[in-house]
Image (cartoon, rainbow, N blue to C red; front, side, top):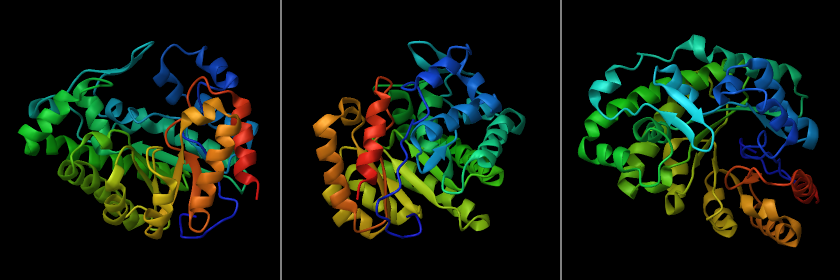
Length: 334
């Protein structure tokens, strides 16, 4: 699909398909105190990555890791606290950027690449392996805010008041992200996805500067050595900016969130690039007739071009696994 081919039925994988909705994942998660310990244990990360492939037979596996391994490898203190989520020691000035390592600490990230190699050796020939990273803007929001945020005041104010200083952080993240993704490809990743989860909080001009241009730079750098590796971009919440993102970043496919009409995707975006998406995770959680109708609508809107079925965001933790099985049946039903 990512080379422009139209497949019927479309391939399917789901964001966060390896995660908390699966009892087998929770069994492993309960044995480890720190979430990052899972990401840095190649045996456990391999097992978690393979769990949904065994259970559901998805067309792709996405390596179990996290976008915040990158700031961790750059020397920023990263922790995951129960009931809170990620907690980082905030970086809010040029001086603090200088305290970060020049490049990612490869020894810290080595288990991630080992996991990819182990998964690649375990997958059947019909299952693709996806590596990923957060886009520079989204990773920067966590680094500056010190974790998740509702208002994004620190990062937006810095980007607006001192774009040159903030740009130094983005430049460091462009370089680190490129290295991290290249290492994943070398380890066996066949497809790359770049998650820009907070793209939707920016104005059109900010979106161009902090989302489009950095991702375009990462894509250009990777394509120099690996032109055959497809890259999917996911600028969540981009709205009308999805079209320009597809044209200007050089990605091979665009993953679309659930606020966008599948009809618009088919009529506009799919004419420029492969598309991925965009079932609302809450509809998957509820299942039943509403899911049947929505899947039919998405398939009908996108069946005439390159299309990968996915969600518009990650699987919700309380999603019944039986609903995932039903979704796969619906997508694969001619």
